Amino acid sequence: MGLAVARELARRHPGAVAVGLDYRRRDDGELEAASRGWLEGSGRTVDELLAAFDGAPLGAVVVTAIERDGTLAGPDVDGLLQVLRATALPVVASGGVGQADDLRSLAALTVAVGDGPRRLAGAIVGKALVDGRVTMEEALAACVPSG
Image (cartoon, rainbow, N blue to C red; front, side):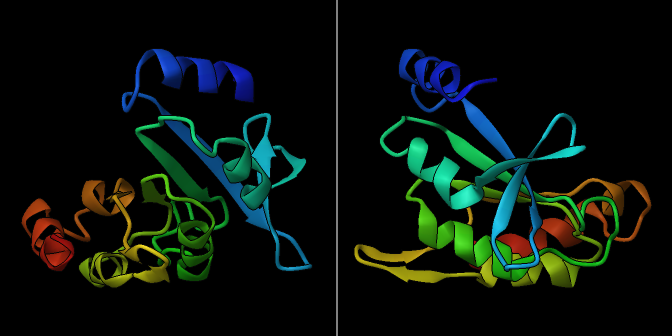
């Protein structure tokens, strides 16, 4: 979906549209958005795309660290901090959660911005629940500190 289409959908349905930004960390440390089902780099950084959505009434940006997705190896905390600093939009973390401690780490993530601290709006947990590495009760309890 193109940027213009996503912005128009968000304008028509404020707060009801979420945009997925899947990325890989490049050798230079930048987060490059992926395209074509994760097969290619888009040539644009996540920061650039977030800036393009500035002012759009999106419900959320779902951010997936491709290298972490499905690995159960823990989320890309540094990448998520970078995204939280780059946008005022609600950010949902995706990729890597393998245990309740990962969710506790995500719930504790904060960045200082001009109008106060920012936190993640949520996290996606898939394989860890399916594989029984974390129960729903454990997941919910791990997220309590974030409110």
